[in-house]
Length: 414
Image 1 (spheres, rainbow, N blue to C red):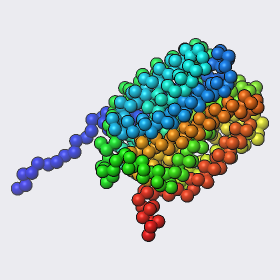
Image 2: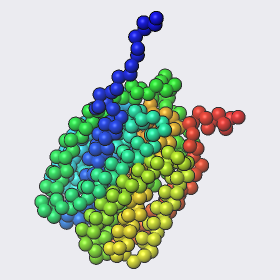
Image 3: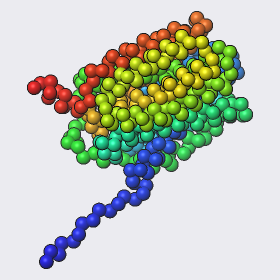
Image 4: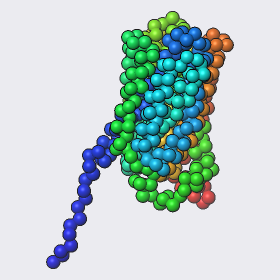
């Protein structure tokens, strides 16, 4: 008689289960992306209250995007080494402090420090990029693209919620109190971050366990597909940051209600909930690089039509809806490609470098928008630059291979 004990698997505690981790990660994405996604609503009230130029405000948000991008690889490295929850909690504190100081900032320098440097650091250390890296470690490869879509959609839902919330607070309490309220909401992030604790290698059982972070970075930057992906993501940042910051002001400039600007930003967030989730499912079934090329080509067409057609409430809302479906739908296939190429172990770090390119584009989109408007009194030139960049991104994504780097190189050497 076999007397050996029966081995049974013990189900994880509910707060260690994959669905609960995804739910908490999505709530973090909502809270971290929501306030910064609504900052474009503050352009007019802050500049009019302080008697600053649009370029002053635009430069602060451009600095924010640049700092966010520069700090994202560092945040990824720290999360991969010390644990995601700790870095997310640190980011939430810096982020909230930046919002509070933005409400107080008496000079452009302080605006650039608070809305620029501090919020940029806070968003980097509390961003959905770290959340997606956690998803990449705990979700099976077949479901990663879908999980990335859900995580990205949560950021869009944050934008959808915070745009009308921000406008309501602006109308009812003033722009300073609106910033205080948004800062207070960020204290929830450390609570939701608890189930996301852990670091690279703790869930990853791949054959790349012996690879160091330095080796992973060198390997990525020596791979053509990674460099093309990095170049293309620059365009995503240029598009979304220029539109998020300057579209509300553009709408007011053409004689329409500022409330329409808030609803346009909210509609972008609402439509991108479906766009991001849909992108996750599509990227799970079809070629991710070709899908990315189609997204960027579609952006170029949508922006061109918006510039060429007469501006009205209808065209603004149609434009917002169309851009919403294309907004952050680039992130699920882009992040999934990083995991496919190199595995999930150092995904937070490697995606952080790609995201830095995104934020360089964000810096130029936001700053050039303010600079060109102040010099010409029009946004026309920057809209057409966005069209050209969309076509460029469509071209560079096409030759990327949707396969592990080792397989691509082995096939090329055969």
